[in-house]
Length: 464
Image (tube, rainbow, N blue to C red; front, side):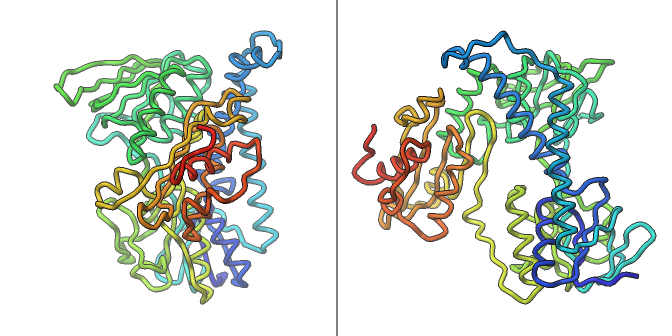
């Protein structure tokens, strides 16, 4: 029986980061993973492979629509789907092998198999039981089915994001159930590849929880790219035939029934914590009503020595949130202060244009009755964006009306996922919009639009 200071269950972004941090802090560490490769959902069947396909399909779009404008004469590009999937798999391999290298470098033992916790202080993997002074549950999440609907997911015709990443061929028609991040990203991939994509969403707006102005503009942009939307619609069932499917739904406004035909149906209605088989019930670990593990301010469960992070606990199901919690839990176990600022966790949608957000939305501030001001700048006023046909979108900065302190930001446009971090750092330091406006930004860069939005919170932008 091996004995460790810490055993981490799950090697996704939260788990592998927690394990590396624990090892860096001098703790004897092991990580349990049942897949053949490390990295969890994110690296194997989530964030990384989807970004590879998004990049490849965007390059196709550029070749079809913008190359000629730049004087680049190419024959009509075609898609080798098998080769594109091979490229995606190669990207996965590079990343998962990278984590394996980091484990070896930091002397972390990989306990291969699926783990359970028979009692506090012990982790069972296969037939072996290991002792651990501390256990971190980083078991992640799995795709959720359509609430209240008769839908059977077979990962062939009716698929989750996992199946959508490895379809045998590009479908002619795809119905995406859910207009959240996963649905819109994967829908964008296939729309660029020539698929007729229809997104069915229960609510009246896409990307629930995002800034209202961003929602409206984002949907318009996606419509221009060929995505079709059926909003305010509740899917009731999906009928599967040999190679086709029929999606039945009701319009919420009048209960009228409708049907859509599809070659592939992508269920993208969110994710749920994956904790099956861990033995949480027998341990008496408390869960929320939605199946998430309850933790205190130190990421510890109600059972001493057992911690939980990432998608398995409350909060946004984001890889970087899990990473922050992984480092924080490791610090706590090592006797240090663990820190996660839940008010400054950015979110990004990797479509084209990208969408990124951090902090408060206008809608939230209105509900709170808080006085605020908005500085906005369109990318059409940004020289770099216009030069690369990326003038659609804007930067929206929200600041406290009295103190000028930055409360949030919402960006739709080129490199939004990178631009948002300047604002994250500013918010961590309690900066004002004026602080950002007085900071010199290189020209010509997309980031100048962020500065212009900050200027718009004061006397006004220069280039608008």
